Amino acid sequence: MNKFLRLFNTVKYLKFIQIYYRLFYFIRNRFRKISKFKYKMIKESKSNSLILFNSCQYYSTYKNGEFNILNLSKKFDDKRDWNYSEYGKLWTYNLTYFEYLKEKEDVNLIYDFIENISNVKDGLEPFPTSLRGINWIKFLTKYEIKDKKIDDSLYAQYYILLDNLEYHLLGNHLLENGFSLLFGAYYFQDEILYKKAQEVLKKELDEQILDDGAHFELSPMYHQLMLFRVLDCINLVQNNNWKNKELLEFFKNKASLMLGWLEQITFENGNIPLINDSANKIAPTSKELFIYAKNLKLRLKHPKLNESSYRKIKKENYECVVDVGEVGASYIPGHAHADTFNFELYINNKPFIVDTGLSTYNTGDKRDFERSTKAHNSVEVNETNSSEVWGGFRVANRANIIKIVEKKDFIKATHDGYNKKFGVLHTRKWLLEDDKIIINDTLNKQCKAVARLHFHPGVTKEDIKEKIITNHKLQITNYNYAHEFNKTIKSLVVEIPFKKELKVEINI
Image (cartoon, rainbow, N blue to C red):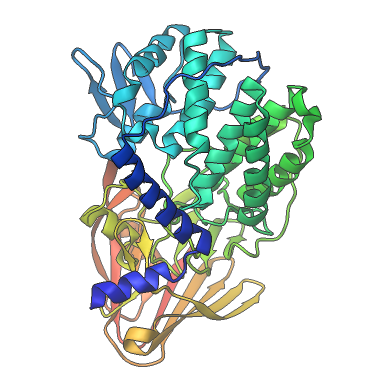
């Protein structure tokens, strides 16, 4: 019964279009299986030469026959396996993104993929197809490669994508579909692809970019990725005359907002807070994106941090990013964590208190832990998550912010994540002075609660004892700091058990 209730509490947030397309694709696939339907993998095409400035470099590499993706390497002895799954589905996806195309002779990897495309499985799903399309077009443009075999395969892939747009997911997935369709439309000067790209991008960017410039899934890493794509679209439209640059001002306005939010949320040393699903060496860095934007002659807008519910407090010797927001977006919360009232603290441009981070998308204990309240700088009540994260990318009941008060150097907020199950409301107050931060946690009734502070690997026990002051018992133990995919570093975490009220001072 609990499983059905959890499923209901997950599904009830979905939009009608998501449910409709889930059912539509499911039924269509059943009929197509019976009729033995197969897409044509070649479509007669005529490509056009594009002009594109160089943009940001990717982290995946291919050298001497070896792929290095997400910090995991694989060298195929004889035949490349484009369905290789030993490292999990995300690695397989990345293998088919083709982000490792660096040298002109890497075109042989494209030929190999095309030769084996009839056997490709995960790589023909809409998301990897979208990224692959952009990366092939960038690569072919850079090296001025005109190849009918590649073009005919790519054109066919675009029409497969067009038939499988990710309306059942929405969010960044549908945005990536739209970005790629725009590249395909320009490359093939295809009116059908262009019309759909325009429809998707205008609607989704208007919805997904909040009033303060944040991407609505509230992951700084995904914000960087979506901004990268918008900058790529500006690069494409600005440098090519097809369609009279009619989308250019729209993209510029969105990019300026997104750049402004990124500038505010980025720490002085260039790091982003690893809040929600965020890790290093996935998206271009903030510095790289700012340089890219400057080359495109873009200006930044600086709206006040607002709708994203992140707050940044900057003093002479420290920076603190505070999360007083709800799960976002409500109907696509796959990258959200149970981290209400989480925060990160940098002292003298060095990370001190950090988010646990992200090391995997593989469903299982590690993914569950990294999304849990226990893995964040907040309060866990009765060994339960503040929002019901489950299944790797799902959220059922979630914490709502029911009250918030903000003044200069002061934030107070209350969430109800523990109310349904235990009748407990959690209130946290931050007082951010020049030389210290005072955090007060209050529960409306006594229960078993634990507050945690996760420290950067460079922080020692002596540093913690010097800077963290509380009248409760303070326990120092270890956790795995997940700064990159498939990489963790042993670090220190403070656990502070309490029953109703807790005061912690952090000396700067």
